[in-house]
Image 1 (cartoon, rainbow, N blue to C red):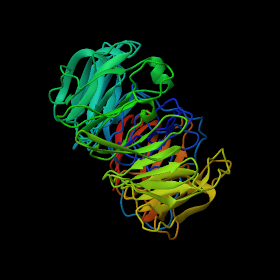
Image 2 (image 1 turned 90 degrees about the vertical axis):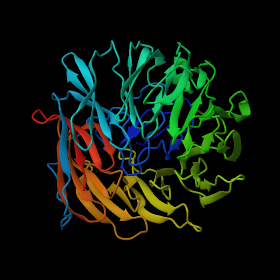
Image 3 (image 1 turned 135 degrees about the vertical axis):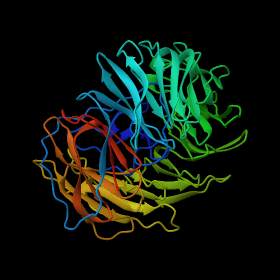
Image 4 (image 1 turned 120 degrees about the horizontal axis):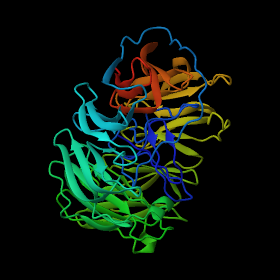
Length: 554
């Protein structure tokens, strides 16, 4: 599950989560913590995906010091009654399966686990309270994680990270709690009684390893790193991690995550409300904590952001204002090498295999840096890049724009794609002029999907796909509000209609085959959906069919 980290703003775009930090710069993470490269962005007039929802590929992102919610969309216009696809037939039909019946509007998706048996985690109304449940995305019996949670007086905030779920008991208005509950499919529910803090939680992709706050006070906490099968707060790995509400709001929240079996944390150690400088610590499975970047040295300190490969041994960090210096971090046991590569970093992607870090500078240069002992920096597009629109799941293709937004209302741009691994990178034009939006890759990374040619009255446009190697554009839906690519494969969801209550009608088409649009689902909540592989997990707002569903693409 991928999360998009934007420093300096709180917003939700498509299925991408943005977390707020204090900074005048904006740094977009297109790596492990990134938002999807397979969605085509927010549909105007609606809200985005559910808070904490996943992107198109990758493992879970880092957890913040407190839960973050998505921004509300503006009022949506009524959509068309549907649209017809291009001629032909895609030959396959998606399956929309009800996973859990619920009272109308009485369910809310928290997230989806990333273990071998993904479960969607959600709240469902239970009288004046709510129950927290999990049900397999593939279908099966729902599991009640905790019943009768009283809103505003008990734990109403659950968190999904990797393959595990956490929720709290005895939570106060400031986020302090008396115990943390952890659930995984493999180990079931475990409760650890300890002074803890809501939201400081992370788990490995398979859910076997977890990290949570312990010995928490109003301004500090320790962090325990343990197993989900037998979680313990007895010997925390990290001590006196600062948590001050003012500091967290201003610029130095605690960020923790697992990269494979390695724990990675970035956090402040002072309670100054203006603090932005964090230290970086890693803990290998069964090992001792190692400080990789120490904020006691002002010149070496970093912002609390984490870009890492799948092993947690190759990282990219960014220094604080005013330089926002990008640095390559390579670890080997207790040894750490930190090398500065560029200044004014605005976007980052670290390949899962640790082969390179791709980044964008404020001067418009798209570059890559190796993780060699002496990093090799290679220009990909030397000048003129305005924004990095997305990265393919394998980190080999980059989508970028070069033209000024010509229509702020529709947030239109151009788009080009480039193979960042090529010896001589040659950009391929996807949209030549600033007339499209919502550019993203399919799950395979072989096609770009996007929307253009908008009707000024209805907001409807046409949904297209184009090979990353160039070639003819294929019209997937001639009249849609937007589309989203699945995490896996080449399936695309289109939204041809938005009802008066803002709910969506969604259809399915394959980005490669094209053909007639296939029926998907109606009455889809625009605020409550998440991808899990090929499954578009969503809630239904209809009176007769409300509940949690999985629309699984072929």
